[in-house]
Image (cartoon, rainbow, N blue to C red; front, side, top):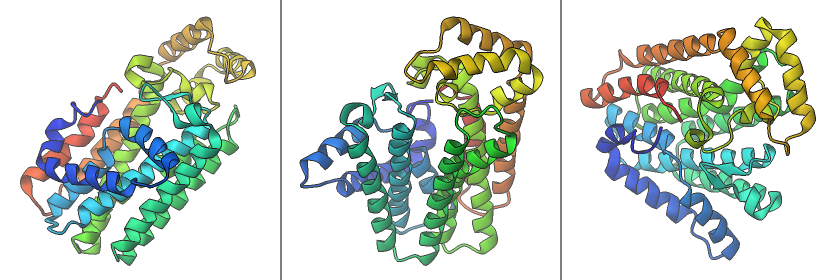
Length: 331
């Protein structure tokens, strides 16, 4: 899924997305050469801007007329970027979006500090928005995201990881950030609590579907599509739903392969024979099916959450198409 793929959904908010980009550039301006260097590298590899786009589209649905949607769209993108920067350090990731990571180029210390700086910039901007409820949402989202990272790292390289841990990590690390993006529109539009809850649920379910598809693609897409090596999650010690399903259905065949990959270490590429064996087992035992079913259910739940919400009809139509579009992505 590229920015080009999303263009149809972004067209109605293109002017405001340009303002978000300008706000991000302004926020990351610095008289410190080291900050300019790190910020320039992050800016050159910018992502799809899906999260700020959801803030802006939901705000358009709710009739927001102030510039607060732009402010908080930038805030959420800064939070998202900070988490990616920190994740790359934790995961020892050499590339992201087919480009070298900050930690690969400048080491862990500078990268962690720059991630911290991004968090602080996001909070400073949010405080300037003078919305106590928005500060509550951001505090909740960032706290739960850190908890998700703690749980994930507590269960790294652990064959006894359960579905309970998997879904807790998924919700905290991914889904809640999406829910914050969509609920923001209701808050800044001063919508009733029921509308804010519907928007929150819409984002939460999109986030769940998004992560399930992400976990599926780690095993089914190519490294060119992903912008990183395939099987990255497994290589980094993470067991996601496709592999949890496979271990339930074929533990004797699956566990020795995983143990062999982990014992070789993260610096050693997964051997082609092990990759082929796992792919064959995943196909033979239909281990992708449950992930696909749950992703579709989350997509449908997102659609259901939004259908009763009053607002701009054309924008609602676009928003209702996004969950299905995200299901079909290949990167």
